[in-house]
Length: 372
Image 1 (tube, helix red, strand yellow):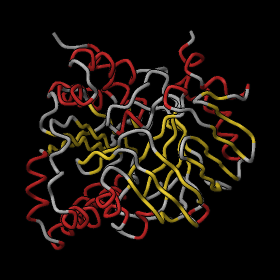
Image 2 (image 1 turned 45 degrees about the vertical axis):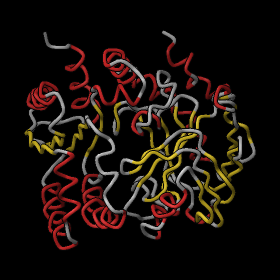
Image 3 (image 1 turned 90 degrees about the vertical axis):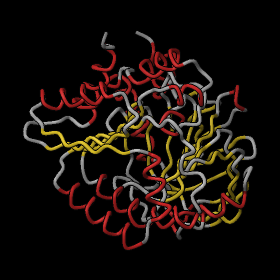
Image 4 (image 1 turned 60 degrees about the vertical axis):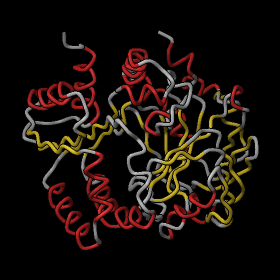
């Protein structure tokens, strides 16, 4: 029997996230391992909305072989084709359901960097010019990474993805107002004392329009304003390798010291290009149903009581001028059970130990969001 929750997610992606209109063209990009019934439901929803569907199926082991043997000329041609195709699209839905998140982990760094700087960079830029949304559908591999049974992870996925985004969006408005008026942000916590300016930067609500699940408010620091040290208490994967205990020290915006469980590999990423060692995003997260990390950025960057920064390229809506072939989100949880911490805007305490302290912002605390 068909799981009715799949249709609910399909409806959310098509009608809430990218709001497909009649005669719009939508590219649905997915890997071949995903449950085909999921793709069919999304196609049905796009057709109901009067849109036209285009499908792109990918497979991780094929991509691995492509990158291993690829050349700059080849990747440039792929990028040109991708940009031309995306220029004809009005929307983009990215479905992921990887069976092996480490499939690219043994590709030489220089090959991955070449692929990222040519094909990856231009593909991302083309996608961001459309209405776009990304999600991951649950499978046994993702459940294993999260330390859960497949059934339990499926229940968890559908639960966290279908929060009341309209209610959450309304609760974000006071924080958006705070951030738009703020000049200096200070983050303090275990082995963390970081400051930067967000003055006159754009502030964007993550209320189910770019990611499913969602629940964040993001901006970007003024590129050269970041100073201090930050230590992350959440694992983060990059090209199939998982990093722990990442600690970064910044001076005038640039990472000047970086350590982790594999410091050499971390520093190789930071040298991808000039922008890779600068911050392109700062975000506060508050999905009330995401509580623990599962080594999956799409979920972890929404953890209740967390914040994250992204090394590398910024978003057009919060453009601090930093461009890079990478955009790597690094997450730190500030709830008491993870060591606590504080965030200040212009010297005013905004959030302590993962909870917003200002009366105007209490609506984003998990107990308020989940209250009927």
